[in-house]
Amino acid sequence: MKRVAMHIAAALAVAGVGAFTGAQAQEYPGGKPVQAVVPFAAGGPTDKVARELTMIMSKHLGTTIVIENLGGAGGTIGAKKVAQSKGDGYTILIHHIGMSTAPALYRNLGFDPLKDFEMVGEVADVPMVMVGNKQLPPATFKDLIPYIKANAAKLSLANAGIGSASHLCGLLFQSAIQTELTTVPYKGTAPALTDILGGQVNLMCDQTTNIAGQLKAGALKPYAAMQSRRVEAFKDIPTAAEQGLPGVEVKIWHAMYAPKGTPKPIIDKLSAALQKSVQDPTFRAKMAELGAEAVPAQRATPDSLRTFLTSEINKWTPVIKKAGVYAD
Ligand code: ASP
Image 1 (cartoon, helix red, strand yellow):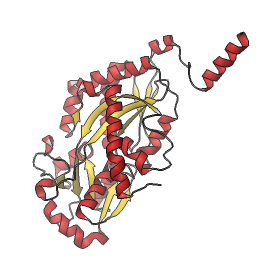
Image 2 (image 1 turned 90 degrees about the vertical axis):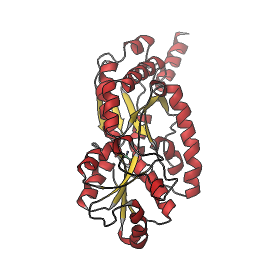
Image 3 (image 1 turned 180 degrees about the horizontal axis):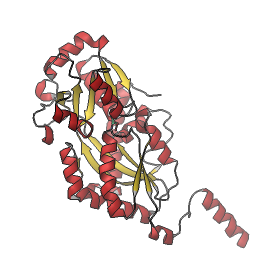
Image 4 (image 1 turned 30 degrees about the horizontal axis):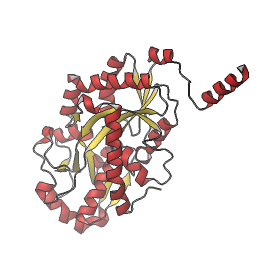
């Protein structure tokens, strides 16, 4: 009997089940730091959302949350690492819309966003703006389109890899104007922005969380807001639709996940801390200043994220399949 019990315990331990006792989960986080993987380069848009959030959330969770930037392959490298991590609450993932597009873009993804993660909740929505370097001759988006059509061979469009927000936005844009540009992938839009400013690449569709400072300083040409209404913090930038190109709209949502098997009491603690953080006036104000919007508390929950992620996967899969784009 004792031997059977030992075998069962060993099998459960291998499966990672029961690695935590209820009491251990109750003690979480117990003063131990939590590592939040951001699957893009430091200083970029996803990193900015994550850093502002974790600064506040550390206080609500009662422990330090340390960010690890693990960029590459449109965010899939970092996400895969978290999917394969121990579900003990000390490794979490902060990712964006790419979580819903990767299954269609990567045939050998190596993880399933819905099956290999526990949902914690949504974080913030961030708009995108098409920007170019100051040396580009067109002054407006309306002028940019014929200019691109005439000079496509010598123009480049930066992105943060296949499946990144900048890639998706660029895809929609190129398909809307029926012109292909040379695309240049980076580990995140922070390094891409350096090259845009330096004139090594010409255009990029980026999140306002990355370019707010340069937009305010007039260091970039802001061609169009890629959403149906103007961005609150950048009201002077007209939308693509206002300038004759309707339908190119991408809202970049961000969310938090933990590896599959993370005990429910831990997920509940993470989600409660996330809900407090998204309501925190400092976080809300910081997001607004960067042109973004913290989600309401009811969206910062596991159930809401699961429903939303499922609907986003169902929305993007046929679009990507139809475009015939694959990353691998
Ligand atoms: N979120 C960016 C993108 O998908 C990448 C980044 O955070 O650097 O384009």
